[in-house]
Length: 277
Image 1 (spheres, rainbow, N blue to C red):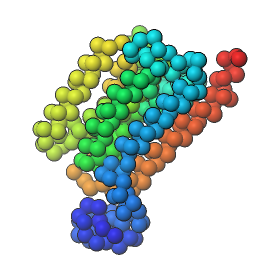
Image 2: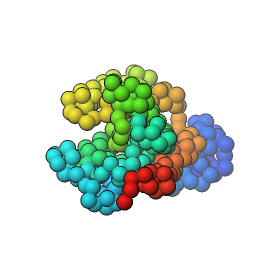
Image 3: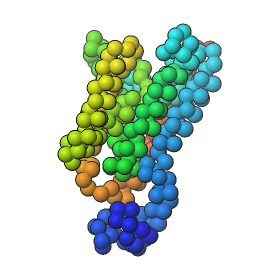
């Protein structure tokens, strides 16, 4: 196999590359497959395709509940659909005990413009972050941003409602702020002013935009940024990505799929019987 870090030949089962020191350089024979997926491990295509699929499923699940009252609510799934597929917020997390929705909510969207805007940013930020950190660590940062963002928003909505928070919250914006934070940390860690200043500019613009528009979950944005920054710091972009980072990234994606499935099951078992016919 070819070592992903230095491009030299290594054994499939080698513990460490003799040339650059990367651990598990052969990735047990999976290196070629992973490299074939591109620098982002196919994550951009996966999150875009998965988000579109889930958005369409939510609309189809409750067609009569679709809202189209204004520009920002154009083709919005109903609250029942959002709950069923794994929306986060004070109600699901603390009202029903659905703690896993901090994972699933980052793949759901509340309207046509909402999903379009977020997925355009995914295409912009995810490949750049994968280039600097590696695809596995990029997925880990993205997931950590979703968990931290929706956990903070849910907690504020439940215990400090006068400060905002959200009863129901969805969207890729929380993990997107985590990617921005990772780029900010990369600039600080490496001294790259170009990367850091550009990421800061985007983050500030999006923060301000969130405060100026109604219905934006700014606590999720803040939590996502903090979670992404701390995770990026722990992973250290100056160190090479390891094979176990890729495996952990795949595990994060698997946990997200399970969180959506858990939301659907618990909705039918726990929530739907209380809603009536």
